[in-house]
Image (cartoon, rainbow, N blue to C red; front, top):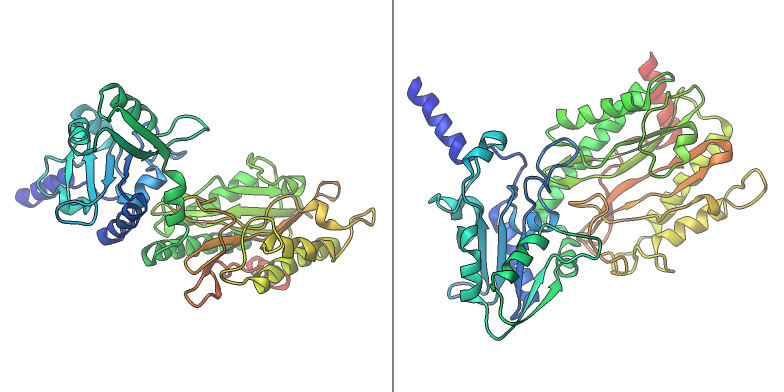
Amino acid sequence: MRRAIFAVLVLLTTYPVAAVDRQPAEHYRARREKLAAKLGQNFLVLFANTEEEGQNSSGRFRQDNNFYYLTGWNEPGAGLLIGPKSETRPYTEVLFLPARNVSQERWTGPKLTAANPDAARVTGFDSVQSLDRMREELVRILPTPRVMIYTDLSDRGSTPSTVPINWLRRANAFPNYVTFNASDPMIAELRLTKDAGEIVLLRKAADATVAAHRTALTSMRPGLNENEMAGIIEFEYRRRGCEGAGFPSIVGSGINSTVLHYGDNNSIIADGDLVVIDIGAGCSLYVSDVTRTLPANGRFTPRQREIYNIVLGAQEAAVKAFRSGKSVLRLTDDSLHKVAMDYINSHGKDLKGQTLGQYFIHGTSHYVGLEVHDAGSTTTPLLPGAVFTIEPGIYIPEEKIGVRIEDTYLVRENGTLECLSCGAPKDPAQIEEAMRAAKR
């Protein structure tokens, strides 16, 4: 018995239990190979989040999205080098892992190092080296005198790569005439098309979010605090094997339903309120995004139902108008937003007799993936593998009516749309019946 317990302890200290479902190593390798083809004779140098940079709202470490997309590695402090052809492959790849920090591991758990003989097998990389050797390896491998380095540049402040790149520059790791370019656009282009493994995880996130919406539907009643409802929702994610919320849950009732990114969740839900519930599970770092609008007491008023049906009709019009290879997310004549806006403007009026388009204050769609607003060009036509939302809304503060209906869609291989989240009821009659049944 002691021997068995000792074996388990050795295993845990050697290979920490994964916090997320990692895709097969060949999926990440295929992405690195595609990126290397885009790089040509240039190089990519990228860094993972540190322990401090990766702390999310729950205190769990969260890897930098681009780094995770290329590596599948969810531990802090690593470095990545991708370059032109090697002796054995059409490209060069090296994963650099930090050395052991025994003191830190007592707080955050054991980490894999390059010294482990199984490091290459566990990570799926041809070469795994100690981060301490990164400067030496760069000096050895980078051509002189000129080279272009793609890395994580940002005009919004520092990134996980800012400090280490600056240190490497001071340590003369790069040739004299090095040029640095932003890696984000190149990686975003790859992230636009989800592979089979990503779609599996996005389905899992959507299914958990649908389950949470169904729980919200049957739990809703006047007198609940918005935050209590958020707690009920987020518990459902964890029951289904997800890390938690992929973004802060929005539960906005009454006047709060008209605030697009309402986040306080601190009001009491009143009889007669509409409640906008904009939520998404985070499962293995992939996120869903689904919104439903519910009547707090289980019955839409005639005016609430009128506005609700207009929003639902706008979503249905956008879905019907979708054309693979033509529809785009940008606000142009080929966009789904124009279809939704035209529908809203041609149906219904406000209390002053004006069209309702003025109350549709946001875009209709955004990409979904490792981020709730995922990377990708809004001018690129939507092609198979794209995952995005369709989410029209009308927000009328003077009537305390806010309605948003949002679903996550996948463009199938044949160019048609598949709704990943339509298991959450959105027909108003179905919503009322489900809420009545819950009360019985």
